[in-house]
Image 1 (cartoon, rainbow, N blue to C red):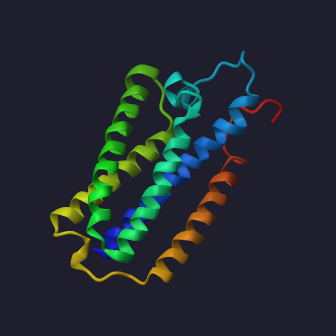
Image 2: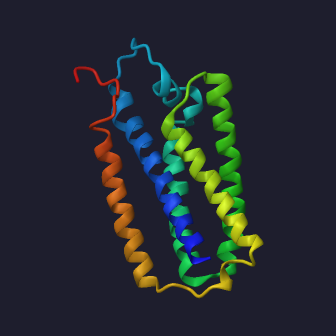
Length: 180
């Protein structure tokens, strides 16, 4: 069970990376793209009307979702608290359903695919699968908790390093930046 919970946290971290990359593109790249630029592929998805909830990029909401999943997963691993387990399932199920809706929009409405959006959808799907496996195998409480100091230190450092990696990746991605 502990390995599954570790996989849950790691998967949430991968979703975090995808969401941070997309959020950074929304904040730092999209504003400098000329209005006359013809966008295609992933940029068509990222700039579509479905990529926002009001003025907020959907990716920023995804980043919040994943950081909450990382935190709750860490609490789950260190406490084996059944309440955390009960809270996680509906949140992740909602995230999964939302992701499937966004995948539908990419394939059938927008007509373009965003690889980071698909990475996020895959992460949400894996999170739900892990939760269901844990639930149907008796819950996380069937194994001992891990030391919180080790879990939280590892999660903090890993998340920080992955955030730096996500931001660095903007320097090598083929983004439509004028004058670059």
